[in-house]
Length: 73
View 1 (cartoon, helix red, strand yellow):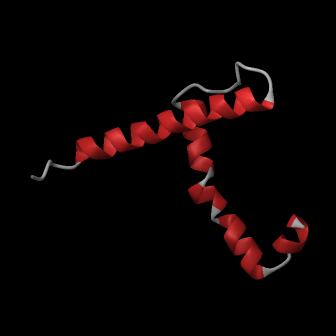
View 2: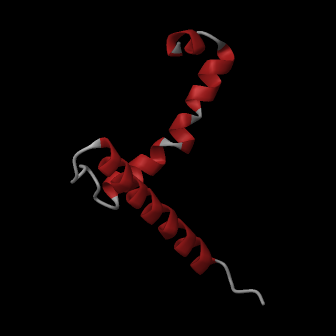
């Protein structure tokens, strides 16, 4: 199915956006946050652990964005 999608020009264009949108998040989580391996076993536990890591990543983004903008009242 993916091979068929990549045969089209539109499919390749959509997939190429992954490098800009998705992959930097994984790189930041691995390099900056030091998350390279799951500590728990089992699909439900791994999903919970990944949700926690993703939540931390998003909270850090919100925190950094909030500090760079002046407060408006």
